[in-house]
Length: 406
Image 1 (spheres, helix red, strand yellow):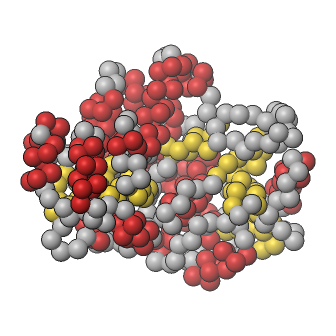
Image 2 (cartoon, rainbow, N blue to C red):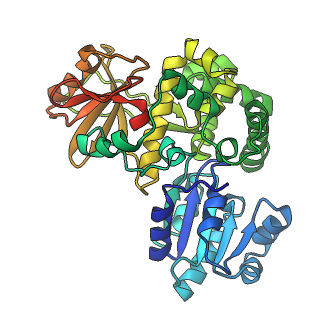
Image 3 (tube, rainbow, N blue to C red):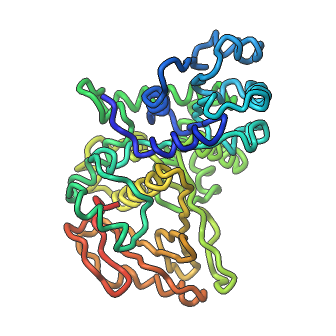
């Protein structure tokens, strides 16, 4: 069963504007399904997951492109980056918009040589797992905590409480677990997913020698979702060097497993902490790795607040990516432990957001927002995303925002 994706209009707009369309994102988020659903009749398809096709693309790129002529979908382009210069030559010669539709399980700007090969010729869309908006069939707009943006969600979003939130968190957002009648069992699915990720994306592409150590690293990273990234602590827990921890973390970022939210900076504030925060982009995968096997156990556990924050941040990221835009997300923390979970910078304004598992946050939850004024910035509208049942104002600029409105 195909669930309509909010990114469809952005993808089609790119295809009309560039000769090459590239959809990136983690494995199993629906990149191929999306493009095959949108493809016109007669568009060829080939996947570089096939070892024979991958070998042909790597060894005989011109012959490969003759065999699979445009319009064409080429799946998992990261396995044959040597194809990209040849695609560049063809699009320079022919100039047809939307001729090549590519997918890749690596973030484009971090793929070696890829950016240079297709500079100015490729439009990029980044696809993540299914959002709550997509699952409920409501319109998806880039999230901002403004009255105008939240009005539509307030009317159309299906309401949910704490139990509903943690059911969604523990289940995750991968389409195979959410679409169709014959859905796989969650734990079995994620076990297979991790093995596929380790064997294909990590072993084949990155030459990680010790798979067991990398799996321990992946699990340790999942246990730190929603927290500031400290390479020294992470390396020490696994028994690896800091350079290795940095290299392996970059693999998680490149393959779309995690995202790093950078701290917001101001020259007027001198006590800011500069470490990024780490978020797993699929909470179901993080729950599997850290062995939370039920929503109830996860909600009652010590990590519940971090998982709830991760869930909200990933939903906000999806809302921006689905509009074809880069999420303008930052966070703030200083040495006095004053912290703002998220700061969205849009249209010259800073929108502070606190994320709480609580169902009834008070004004103390937004006390840290005052730090923006110390930096000479007048904050825009903000709020507290939480498990409240209703949207309510906290003051003139800030509101209580139920999680199901994100």
